[in-house]
Structure formats: C-alpha cells, structure tokens
Image 1 (cartoon, one colour):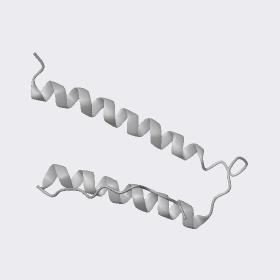
Image 2 (cartoon, rainbow, N blue to C red):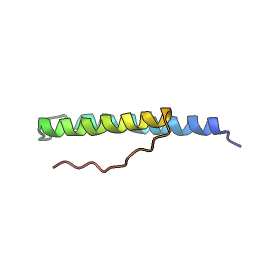
Image 3 (cartoon, helix red, strand yellow):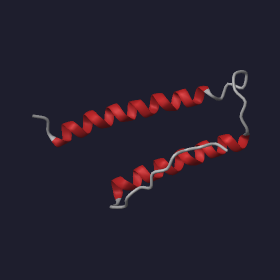
Image 4 (cartoon, rainbow, N blue to C red):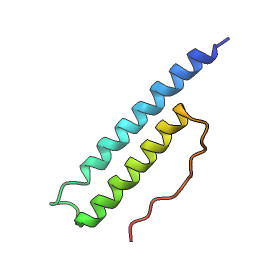
Amino acid sequence: METSREKFVRLAESRVNNIVKTMRLLGNLSNKSNYTYTDKDVEKIFRTLERELKSAKARFTADGASEESVFKLD
C-alpha cells in the first residue's frame, strides 16, 4: 500500500519531469531559421507561463483556487 507521501513523491517527480521536458521543447521554437514569431508572441508565452507557475505555487501556500485558462496566440 502506497502512503500519501510516496504517492506525492512519485507524482511530483513525474509531473515536474514532464514539465521540464515540455519547456525544453518550447525552447526549440526559438530557432528563427525554422519558425517565425514576434517579440509580442514571446512575451505572451512567458507571461502566461509565469502566471501559471505563480498560481501553482500559491496553491501550496494558501487555500486559493487557481483559474484555468487556455493559451492562444492572436
């Protein structure tokens, strides 16, 4: 039987590793020889990521619910 701590560690490690992998893939989009983007696009992407990271962190320190949103470029 898995304890709640063991379950947390297992899921946290898996989810953080998935996020790190996805962030590295996002970084691949910076290759201007393969992609076209604006500074506005980049600012919007990172503003969204920073907001979501701040929201996730707040959930560990407070009883606040996070707002879910879907990211879209204009």
